[in-house]
Length: 345
Image (cartoon, rainbow, N blue to C red; front, side, top):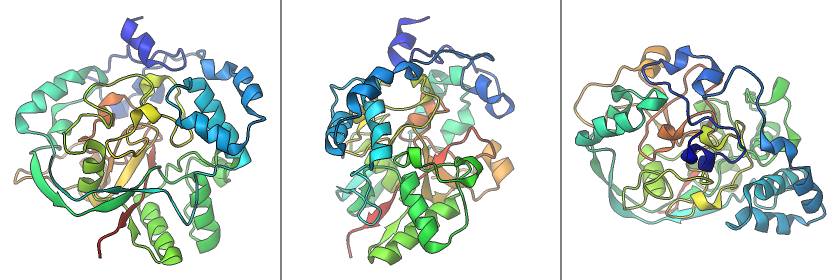
């Protein structure tokens, strides 16, 4: 076991030593793709009863303070988040989602062509191939007006309220037998379509009189990178306890906002890991080159909805702020969303 792998895991479960180089991820079993052995393995989250016992008497506001405290141990934050799901999480307000203003700016987005081979090689261990990285090219300049972006991804509770109020029929595949998981109320909703995410934004706009929508790719990338072009929301180096990717060893979603160390440049949480996030854009090449006809193009068609941010089932390469992805027809693809809002009229 490498020292680095020991530092990255939050549960004692090691996945980082996986070698997927030269393999087609979508042809592997889920466990192979996540670097897991074919047998049951221990996970320290199965043994945190003492954390629950100590935190259960606390009021919701005290539990929120634990989640937000960078000095709290991960197991404490995890237990506090799950208790909040049962007690009622005051951070989650269906009709008044917490939004963070992202200032107007002229920024450089995308990846310079000369970095393609370097980035591909850096993540080849995880099966990354050059054509996936080439979708991020070329780097380009964008002028963006100010907008607001949700601090958290939309949760199961918010989506449930949408379903019961609107009559919309798409149930997330992540809800067992289509039943709302009350014990995971403050977890991000996931395994639903881009159309359902768009419908949610339209519903909330109609209910509130505000202009909610899915963020564009450019808005999402700017909110994650700021003006310094960082590789991850917190900086240029992948670090432990910043996000819920497969390296953490959690192998499940977590309550929103559980990684205060991983906040982006403007304060947004979970922009890497936990669930991938749909954007408002379908795939188009940035420049004049032909579209990349990768596995997503070949299986989902040319107009697949672009997602960003990585998830708990995937390695750090998908957590990169520039990485362009989408929903392949597989349970390995964990798709959620967060809201953007027009604030300049």
